Length: 202
Image 1: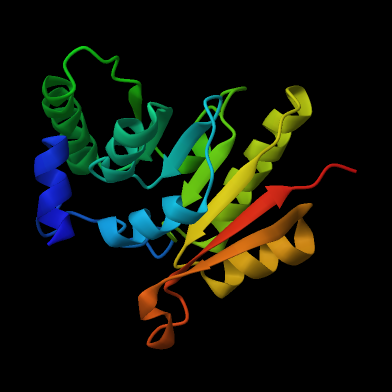
Image 2 (image 1 turned 90 degrees about the vertical axis):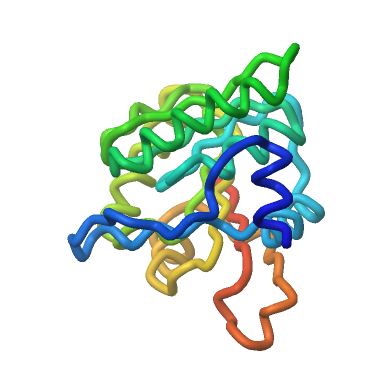
């Protein structure tokens, strides 16, 4: 099973039952992206050495370590839940022991997504439907403001994207859908897919 294989490979713990999630309607229950889905994503999504990822609602940091292990890229995980944040930090120490001789460029921010200070080098933003469209809009506006201050190519990666997210990006922003990556489970669940949106400059 890929979940246990990758957790052992990366020397992290991300497969246990998720507990302690926020009761607010604006924040959704945390669930890690399946490793099999990440394999499909990065088999069809090209990254380069300057990319810097941000995972909103990172939980225990699975995406951080997966990307860093395979591509040696900096990844920041944003997590509001202190329990998950502490688990992510523990995983960071375990992962560092596994990659002796390599710099561990994984970062974690404990706080609300709308409070994350977007870095001028952040250019790839990952969302597994972590919160309401209202918060999503606030986060996107912060990203857009950052691009106004420091122009760069920006892409959003949405897994299991909500209709509200897609509608907002498609009709109320300058983001354009450039790729859809479907998964083997697509026939059973149309939301089992990745959508890649790129910011189009005018």
